[in-house]
Length: 162
Length: 338
Ligand SMILES: [Fe+2]
Ligand SMILES: [Fe+2]
Image (cartoon, rainbow over the protein chains, first blue to last red):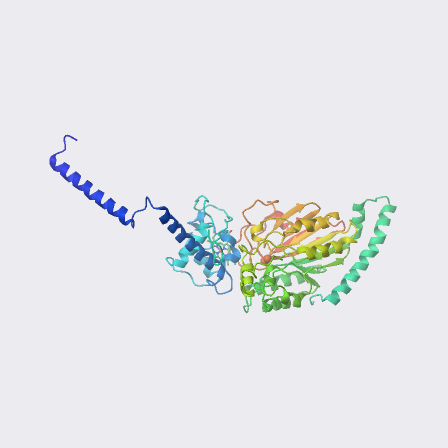
């Protein structure tokens, strides 16, 4: 460090000062900060996730996505056989490598004769969240040829959320 | 043919009962005369071979020209085309989807096209809008027995859950809505209940242990996957009442899939629906070799079908899955030995 010129030294300390200041501001406002988060914050985020699961559970079962009375839950109880951990993959009904969201829309439009959801809609996000949450802990394995059972999700309307 | 009314049905059982009595008197003495003796030999003499058909889980909606209407019609046409014609047809529950009178009457109209007599038990989808009122209006008692060619047939209502709706203040429609979900979180486990257990005990009391028995319930008589009510909570009591018999064949709906099990004196088979197939639940199957293949969601008939059951003179049985599409592996296509 003894070979640092005075100039370089000055510049470095300047950068350090700015960095420290920015970090301090980030920690203080904690809007952009990811970690560490307070327990309360973590609980709130968990709650937001579970609300999306619950919304998805509702959409999954109420049949409103289709026009022939069917709901996803008719054929996919607990979200089983949607296999979120295997996506993206080649799916023969899609005829290409597609995503879970594309397959959700395929099942809305084909067996349920409904209108597809916008991929970035809160409904689509909720659908994906429900299916994926029902497979929490299952190892991601794109393209795996597997029909997977699902874990119970206690999140739908009228049900206790945990 | 019309659904068997109570009157017709009594006549029918009496005729069949007479046959049983006749063979019941003659057969054992004949076998003992020739020195075969033994209960099993007596049993083999009692059945004159026959076939019957089973349909289940049509889940008809109150929507005009719904695709499920066509599937039930197709299954009925398939049964009517069988050669030889089955002697009778059993229907294992879930005719409707939401328990509406319109769904049940639509179902009855289609089933009435069967050219042979048929008997029905309720599924949860037939029942929880009005607690079986409309269903009973169309189909009569929810549990029954009759004798046919030496076999004692029993049908029971296995979908009775303790009251979860009164305390929760649910409307009939909300109650039905809950029950429509296979994974209903608050509906609880179902079974036949005390009254039907008493009825069953009385029904089989006078029957000899060598009487061949076929029992149909909506849900399996073994604990398969309770979370989806792939179970009957008082099945142990039912099985114990039937344990005096040498052999019992059990068939059930509700699971919308091929599934097989053996326990005690009983062989059990689950049936294909005519609405949609269900994936296997996340548990090990007792007989994993009897399983249907994954279904193509683009082929709405895949995983659906009707069934023919053949009963031989020794009361061995075979369940033939008559799948609309080709989802069955070779060993299942050959039929399940019961
Ligand atoms: Fe069903
Ligand atoms: Fe059912």
